[in-house]
Amino acid sequence: MAPLVRRSWSPRGHTPVLMQRGRSRRKVSVIGALVISPKRRRVRGYFRLHPEANLDGPLVLSFVKELLRTLRVPLELIWDRLNAHRGEPVKSFVARERRRLHVHLLPPYAPELNPVELIWGHLKANPMANFAPHELAELVEQTDLATCVVARNQPLLRSFLEHCPLSLRLK
Image 1: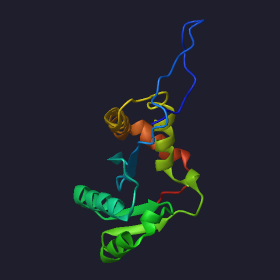
Image 2: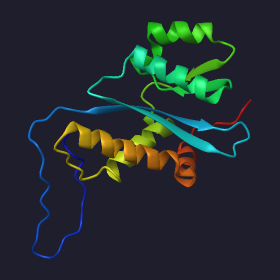
Image 3: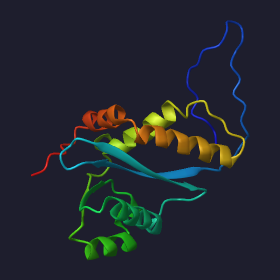
């Protein structure tokens, strides 16, 4: 739960002090998706928080199933090469859902092509910067608030898409 420390302002002669609990390894894992409407008019962010968990195949699979239930349209997923994305539970589900779900993998080691990676960087460097929670519940609450704010911000979500050199045009 150590914060990403960023430059801040304080009165002259008063060095800001950031209090944190030492050596805490507690965390919140976040899975997210950027969804672009077929006519490119809207962009939405969908996020799910998993306190004290590592993302694995079953968690990724439940997120994808929830997206399919929520959106009720065919999905084109563009994924990085995280093992959880390529594991057996996800692979077999994608094979069964070929009519509604198409998966495209990004090249290896290409985070600059992934707009969701830009969201994580933005969250850590802006709303979550210098945030040093004492309890896991505080971290979960602040992360949930920050992801909700980003999910509703159309210009910000569009900026993440425009910043990536990945072409998202349909063939």
